[in-house]
Image 1 (tube, rainbow, N blue to C red):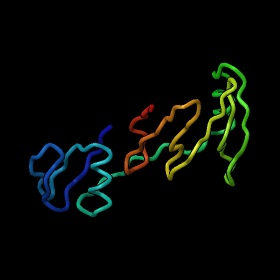
Image 2 (cartoon, one colour):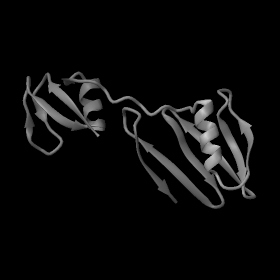
Image 3 (tube, rainbow, N blue to C red):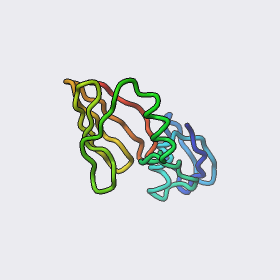
Image 4 (cartoon, rainbow, N blue to C red):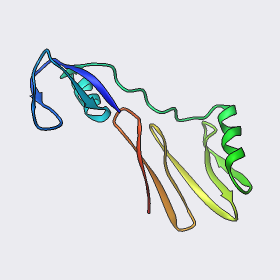
Length: 125
């Protein structure tokens, strides 16, 4: 996604061209967040991905899961920190924007977020 920013100071843009004060440019979410939070530009920061699901979202997600899912433990906010599915136990860690990692069965799924809290990618290792 992209965000339109209006530069307050002349700086180097994402593609290496000069972005001049007073002009507006289309920037990636992460670059726009850096410019806005550093007071180098104005614009609207992208909204972060919600880190918790509503009851309806939980029910819909559970309906899509094949096999039984058992929540073994939860943190102080009620988020699942350990669950068992298909005989494999998984551990879930959380970062400031939501799930950071899920690991189990010898694999780890890492969630990568932008500085603004948008999910950018996942990595399986």
